[in-house]
Image (cartoon, rainbow over all chains, first blue to last red; front, side, top):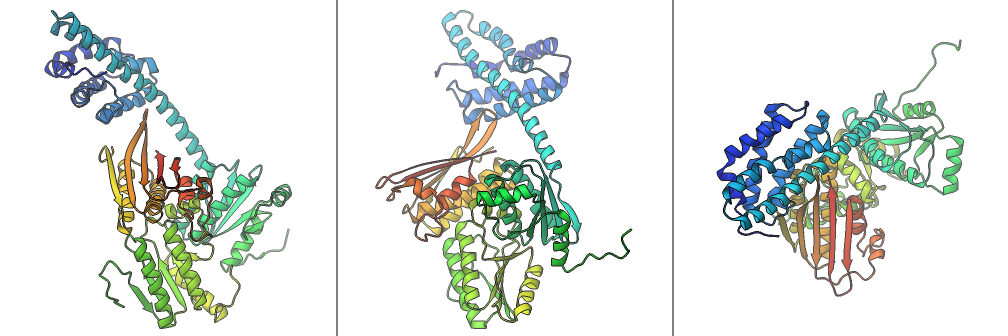
Length: 285
Length: 135
Length: 134
């Protein structure tokens, strides 16, 4: 609800210094063990400044508009930082909610003789600060999720190494299921390595892939296709008998990609293609 | 090779012996793509080129129109007894093309111009003319 | 941070299609998308802009930023007052061998985007909206 007569922004701007001092004192007293005073002050100052700037532009009473982007970014940063330091979501949200105390005290002084206006301003302020406080809990939750997602991705990257077997020959041993997220990572890593090493052959080994259904086959074909567009031919190796059966049963078309049962066989084939040979120079023991 | 079009409305085509070399360095609008297609076909015939090397390493975007044009160029060149290689596709472009569903199967590719030339030479050396089966 | 609250580009020529690509690139860079994601959304924009020009007889592309909590996204909306599409689900199926049709444009743009919405009917023009979340 728009309150065109709200002087909230003007009041905060006018009394910024005392409001800030009171708030920072309050935060320092109630702040957890994990937060450092300088950072709190810095955040508090930024919060008040951005609050005033946003309120001056956007009087809709909603905080999801463009005018509030910088404030939301600040709160997201604060949440992320607190999440990393081990604060709870409540502790982080109370950073925002605690602003009500110094703000309301100031409003009471301003509207001493006008109860109706005071009530209105308190309501406007409450609505805004509640939204911002809730936003921090959302941002907190999201940043925890982001940390997990990032760790998952790092795990995925670690588990899809691209190995240089020989000059011009790369190998990608895939371990685990090949879903679309994994495929993206594999493609990005493989293509980058092709650029870096000038490889012309990539052996994609699926020994460690438990099942190959039509989706997995599609992902494989995407990887093969992307490598080919960069001038590198693929060989798929590690095809177990059951996999071969499944592929035939499902009618999957591997589109003329060379396939070998073992990585070793694929390597020999690849060497042949780059014009090298593998010979045994000593008799078998 | 000027044909009355303003600069920036043409892609220069270089003749290097039996090969034609095209380096695409500008953002191409559809008309320019069509112009290139026409020009190249014309030049292949004119110079009896045996190989066409198209360097797209400067292209940040290859959409279905440009992708299909590359395919068309390769097909037309083949009919005119010339081998085409597209070189320098960027990883992000390759990934996007595959997601788009365009595999460019009829188009030979190489990582860079040097490898592309070697590829064309191998193909020409192998068969003399281009009757060999396609990979 | 997005360059502006929103931006609308008229699509009436081949050059405008290029312009849509360039502006989409600027926006996706400003919003911090990875290179691969930038490439995907710009390519999707190119497909849809071309459709708007060729099949829609010209129209507009509108870009704006989306937020969902702390998630950021880029939204592109393509509109034209052209003949419209009689069978949308048919059009979404890749028909790049059919020559005449919308080919990979719609299906491709869908595959390259996080979300894809289309409204079209004969005589009612076409409205396509795609988003890419960061």
